[in-house]
Amino acid sequence: MTNNKKIMRYKIISFIFLTFLISCKDVNNFSSGSYPYAETFEIKLPKDRVIYKIDSIKINKGLIVPSFKWAGKETLLRDKNLKNGYFVFYIFLKERNQIMYCYAKDDGTDKTIIGLISIQNGLSLGNWQDVNRDLSEDENEKLK
Image 1: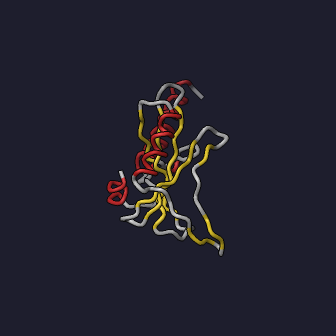
Image 2 (image 1 turned 45 degrees about the horizontal axis):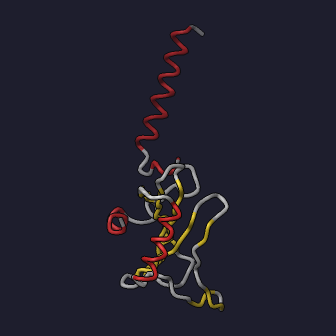
Image 3 (image 1 turned 135 degrees about the vertical axis):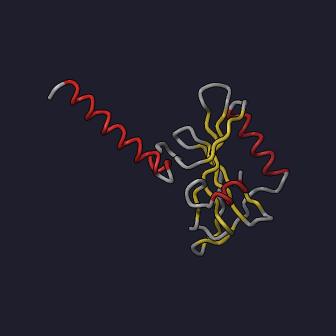
């Protein structure tokens, strides 16, 4: 095969691939990472200070998820540090009766990335909806 044919073949394959990617309604289908659909925000504070502020706000504003019965047992969703460096936490929005599942991750500098992962309606677990995947555009905008 001549060099011109190889170049033309490469261009055609590249064009088809890019057209496919652009035409996908949800490009996040190709996302990688622990939480590919999470809506992320950058805060210019180290992760330990962000975690302290999250805890303070949850206590002072009444955003702690109350305990509830699940599978016949009293259950409490606890914030925790994961081995992969993520701090995962839950926020209860009483007026909306929703639980927000979020994370905080150090970006390697003095900044922290906060991610809004998913939403649970009510206090009966098992119906989590991922942000930017399961929610409508309108619902996503209201959360942000």
